[in-house]
Image (cartoon, rainbow over all chains, first blue to last red; front, side, top):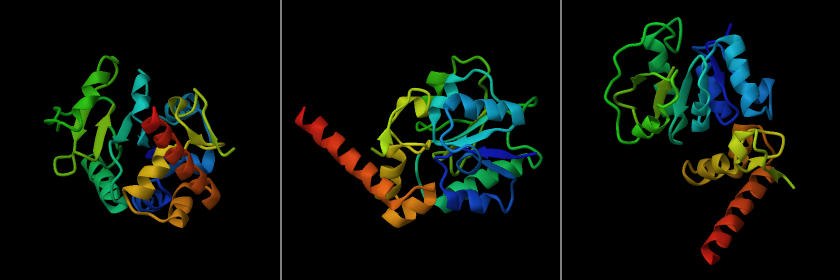
Length: 138
Length: 68
């Protein structure tokens, strides 16, 4: 059972740091070179959200959750941001049935609005202090 | 050729062949985060030659776009 699928675009140092707190399925190790469909399929199979820099995953209407890092920044900042999301929901990184009220989005995040036409997507949490870095969608 | 495109991988963006790592991932990590070629290589599990080719690819694309 995994807490998170780390896409291949997530640098190894970030994955190694996150593994101190979470069980990670790392695409680079397990399914290197997978197609987008194979990654989303693995996410569905494991019922585990994907951590990725790839915003194109939002084109899929059905998935357990996508934690989208919207810009490259220091590895420590990314790691802390993801851990912070994890603290909000220790058992799961993403809500599946109990969405919280959506917090105010920053301009950097509002690009996700363009993808809200996909019916299953529900933004539930954006980190306040680090909101430019991580957006979480289920 | 190390750089390839496949519509089913990263939505057709240029990637290092056999991976899901895009040229953009490499360029941003190298330039924006200031990681060395060796560090980028280790970060994404690819060779230093592949990192260098991705950087060359990006430069050549930018050059072509500027000329156009």
